[in-house]
Image 1 (cartoon, one colour):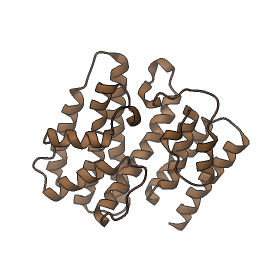
Image 2 (image 1 turned 90 degrees about the vertical axis):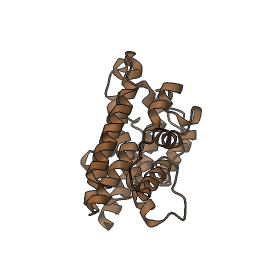
Image 3 (image 1 turned 135 degrees about the vertical axis):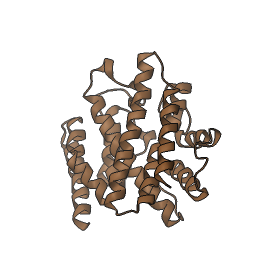
Length: 262
């Protein structure tokens, strides 16, 4: 991967995003939020790559994966008006289809094309499969961390906006009800990932993201969580109950332990 390669990919991505522009304000908000999310994931990926001491070529490859990880979201939204894969299509698989059909990766080395395709495919799986080679595992983990970090930002900012200004697809169609699922809360308490299929309210979605912190791979990513106060901000969006406070404390302790361990 070279600087020229990444420049060409950025130009392709900008043109591809622009092709989904629409005068419908609500739809445009949802397209814009995914475009902006992509750019922020790229920034996160670059920081993680540099903190890991990756080579310049590897860092450019990490940026390329981040740039293309959500490319399937645009056609997903246009066709289904949702970002919920469970009622539409797997957006990672759709992204791979887009990359192949548009020849977006034409001109790259075969090994780089293959790595990007694999990392895009894996970025949204519940957990990474066994048996991945070390290089694929590195870039998949990096993309997943960079993505999760920015989804937290998106959700936190979503709840800070008035309802008329929100990109409504962020909420995945979940009701903004006062309760939360004991199933999802129990996952946080057990230091386990929660499943999207168990979500019943937007509070569950916030708890799911706190549980994501058990699946963060790199110290650099955990530092960004603390720097940006994501735990405090997500906790502040949840009901102030004893069991929520206890769950938040467990997440905070897990992050602190891992940072101390290095």
